[in-house]
Amino acid sequence: MPVEPLPLRDIHLPEPVIWWPPAPGWWLLLILSAVIIISIVMFKQVRKRRLLKRTALAELAMIRQQYQENHDRVELVKALSSLMRRASISFYQRSSSASLTGTEWLQHLDKTSQRKGFENGNGRILATAPYLPANSQLEIDFDELLSLCEDWLRIQPVNPHIP
Image (tube, rainbow, N blue to C red; front, side, top):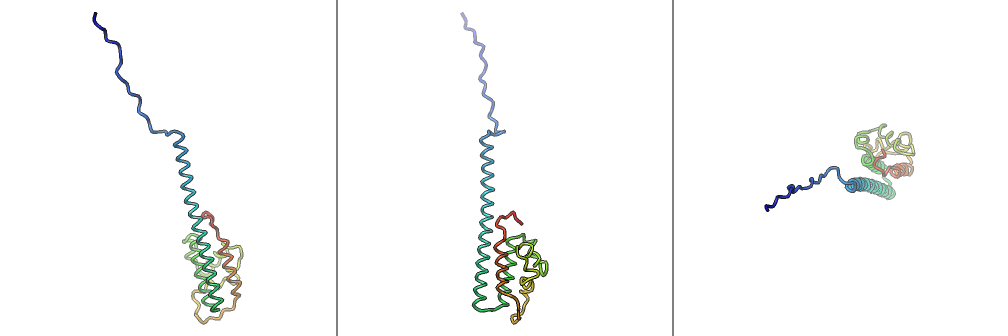
């Protein structure tokens, strides 16, 4: 008796595994990675701005010490003007503070300060300080000017998203 072939079908392979959409665990890993990267970037920016603030305050302390040693008023206001300009460019967008001069510069300092003593107080000397001759006679309260600049540096935002 002849053997009849069984009605078997050929081997079928399973459907290929698709890569999209990923499993929920991969979505969670992607979101967690994004949060970690954003947190690291923000941490570095805040750390950099804190370092900037500490550096500016340390330079102000050096300027104050030099003034107490040599009592050169013109050199003091020139150094303060330079420090405030560099700090402003570092704390705020370069395009919004680097090109300011005269009254606009003083208004910017007042706008970004709690004490309003730059445009109408002792701070107005900062607008003309870089152009003063070495033998200029200045009649302002230098302790008040140093205090005004120190207060401005101390209140600058550390968070990079604060204007």
